Amino acid sequence: MSDRLSHFRPEERPFAERCLEWAETVAARRTPKLTPFLDPREKWILRTLIGGRTPVSVSFFGGYDGAERERALIHPDFWWPEPSDFRVAALAVEADRRFVRLTHRDVLGSLVSLGLKRDVFGDILLTEATCHVLVAEDVAPYVTQHLTRIHQTRVRVEPIPLEALRVPEPETEEKTHTVASLRLDALVAAVWRLSRGKAVERIRAGDVKVNWRIADDPDETLGEGDVVSVRGFGRFRVAEVGGPTRKGRLVVRISKYC
Image 1: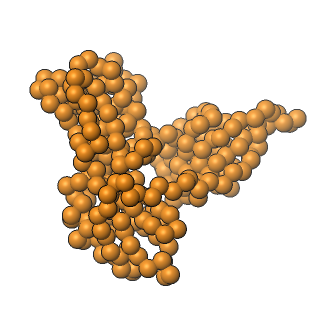
Image 2 (image 1 turned 45 degrees about the horizontal axis):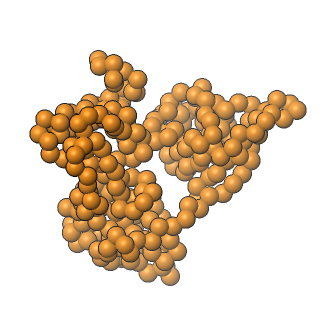
Image 3 (image 1 turned 135 degrees about the horizontal axis):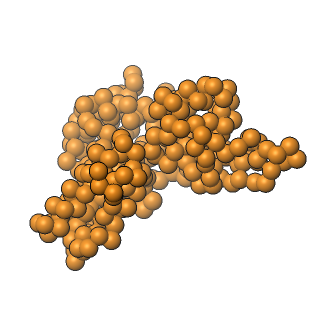
């Protein structure tokens, strides 16, 4: 195994190998390679493997500044891409908000049920009045035509310019917990009010991600800034780690995404 791949988790190595193949192809042919939408962990892997690799560079764009999921463009270092080169399209999903409140899970589930892969979809932006979805340009017409319902609610999908995107402010709930340690199982149990055993079960089952990678070791130690997601529960960020209490427990401020 290449030393460059040895520090990645086994399930991440196929993607890491693809990153190296993309870079080698771009270097040999001197033509750019556009990837599907990548999550933050995949972006980190790609940047780690080929960022600054002469004569290849990598750029990212997901439809707006600060997008979580973005397409990458691996390109010769003498060429600089424009936003249009990433082929990202924006769609507005309209539903009667008097009868339904669209959720991220509902919208994503309906998109995937169209038979398309997750990696052709970018961020889903929800506000009180709008639902905007970033998609790969080549699948936008298909989604516009075939996404007609979310659950039992009829919806209408229309293309919009990227400049019309409404990017919501992240909704978070701040809460302080005292925990015995910064172990993954301890924080998952505290945030979601689970027993330590239930938290360990979730982690062992592969239902927990830390910084967008599967984390199946309950003993893993977290730190400030780490983002944890638990399938079926949601996501939180370790906002601040304070000093110990008199009993030696740690005071941790958590931002839980609503």
